[in-house]
Image 1 (cartoon, rainbow, N blue to C red):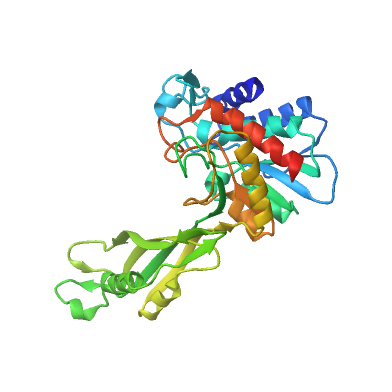
Image 2 (cartoon, rainbow, N blue to C red):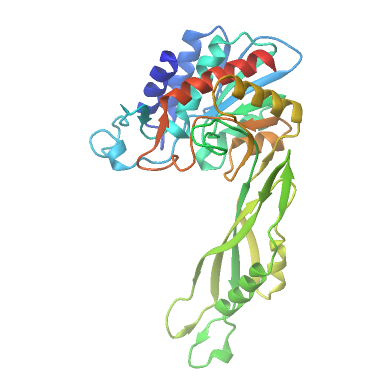
Length: 361
């Protein structure tokens, strides 16, 4: 456990919200120094290591980028280039990236080093997860295709406080823009133009009438959603607007999507997909059960299979054919906050959990 805690502190202290090079260097150098694995750094900044042999491959997956820190999370009060602040108190480690997800990343690195794997064991730390899975997609495009993967995003505290569960599914996110075009005119003669705001409002009415999909994965229910979150149109109080844009946030579930294409039935409206982060569904109940068995062995609580509301790199891996679960130290509400933290005992738990999975799957 001491190695996981020390490694977490080291990784968290390294800024990686704009430039991930130094964090990737730290991950790569530790793997080269501490393991006999084959270690590779690809053009996207991903660090991928392999050790062991067998008929199947199991990957422990994380990422070393983070979202921008709050000023109080940076030494010197937000001065560029300084280290991130890392503080230990009350059984927790505080700092940007402790929960999302350098803590679980460190646990996976130590487990990768110490495990006696039953098959080929792979470690991957991706770049650009917070930018829509840039690193994961690049790795997949270059042939990264493990048979199984445990993605170390947060799964602690879903079924009960402090219990590390195993997520067998998560939602995706599709962000769209409805672009309504009309014809400008003076507002004193509205009939001389085509009001783009009116057309946008008609498209919004279509969105409001659409049913969000739902599905069940290994007994876990996922309910999708769709909502208009922004609207922007018009140029002046006395001008009939010729353009209006509407932002739509859609939370997707495996195998189902809202039929947003129906908005294009409104004259002058175009539906544009800006981002599409895929959902994840574990397609192997035996693998999900094996990880759950490992989770039960390393803690006193009773972990369960759960579903996460947030997209992760597991979505990209699952879409490419890897059987995935999500299992990690972070609790709901910790990631991306000014008080981000992770429980130290849970970091040790995850180290042993990952190791047991590597030695049993």
